[in-house]
Length: 118
Image (cartoon, rainbow, N blue to C red):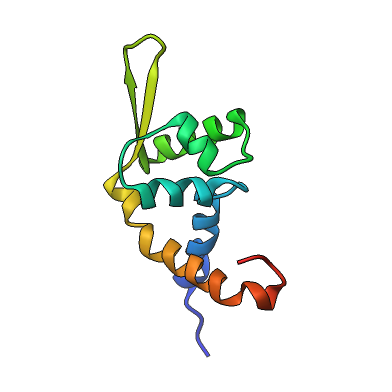
C-alpha cells in the first residue's frame, strides 16, 4: 500500500479540547467566566469575588487579566476616588454560554452519581 509522505510529514492538528482546557485552566476559571456570562452586565471586582467565594484577590486578578488578554472580557476603569473597576463579558465570551450551560446542566443531572453536591 503506498504511503502519503505529505500526510506523514504534516504535524497533527492540535486537539481542540486541549486548547480549550488551556484557555479555561485553573480551578476558578469556569466559575468566574460563567458568572460574568450569566450576569451579562458590568460587575465590580468585589461583587465578583463574593460571587465565586472563597477565591483570593490575587487569583481573581490573575484570571481576569488572562480573560481580558484573550478577549473574553473587557475591563473598564473609572477615574474616581476610590478607583472603580468593572468587568463585562465580550461578544466572544458570550459565545461560551451554550457549552458552559451544557456542562452546568450535566453536573446538575449527574452530581449525585458522582457523589458531588448539586
